Length: 468
Image 1 (cartoon, rainbow, N blue to C red):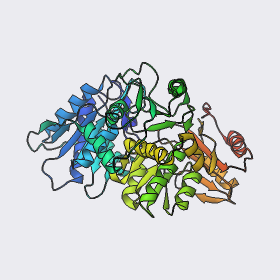
Image 2: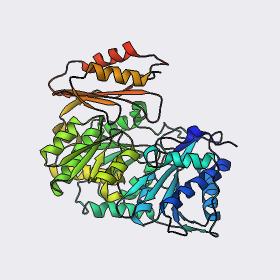
Image 3: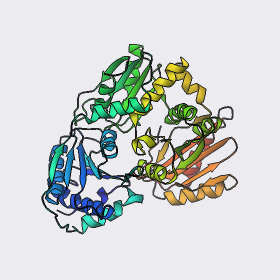
Image 4: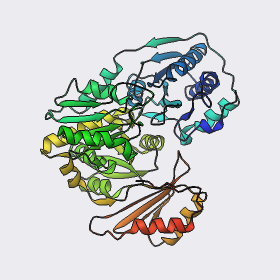
């Protein structure tokens, strides 16, 4: 069958199974990925490729097709079994393997599956393969069905205890903190984050109240996307019912972790970034902290107050990892609840984030709501989304209308004024125009409502979709 070019996304390869991605076209796609890997390691005869997978019903068949193709090409396939995406990254980076393919469709519904691709630089961090780092090359090689000369028959090597190793590594990196005993409700959405949370709670004090920890690729309870508020209703309710100290909501492949305070309210990722950055900067003076362009006022001011330096990035985990590889930084936070650490190869480290937050609560004696309030420096609008046909024209018009502000075009347009700012950008994953607004705490003037009216005035709508 033909390979649909649309499955090659900004951050991964992803499509509906079996119509767009299946065992048949996984073979030429894998050949293309391996050809790309060989370009990265021209002096290596045989590569070690980690191939992980999530709990979707289509993952075993895709794993078989991918791993058998790699073995036929002469690679050694490292099989860690069922793993979250952060655990997969940990295996590639910490064990010194060359590269890897994770079979997952992240937070997408059950009918989807896909491949996340990574290369280990070995002298610093990981390269996540996306639009800026080689996805177009892989697409071209796949569509052209590149021939790859086998160098002999490879093999499959299974590795055990990688999740336990990941947990021990996180505890080592945080110096085995002496934590208070907190009650934590964790909603894993029947997906991969359940594994590392369960393993962590074998080693730290506290009561874990698990919600939907049974792995089930049909997502029987709710979708595995905590960015959508309706998917957090169960964990919000459970936190209050249990009188818990905090809640966690994890996405489908476990690379995003959302925090809820003791009142069952989601704490914005920008505030979590500020809390973790403050903890790190008090131990690592003057380090650089990065965050994406959407919400910067709270983390930027906290970082500067603690004597750190700031880096602003495009939205998207592949872009952020790339920026950390290029420009350094001990930690980065994204507004969609991806958190990255130098110590994890500049990949996501949800275990480290959780340990830092628990440690901050323990050392301060404060509740999560109090810590969040303590670092808050701005009011965030929440992301508003618009399904429009003329996104570029709208971005250009709002840039023109706000030319008296400080303009950044890192990702779409962001405009900074002394007491407020906004970011307007096209989504990398959906046909949406995304608006984010933040203002000083004492200067609310309904600016995001005014921006919404401007967008509506200039928009050619397909079908409007308001965010939250």
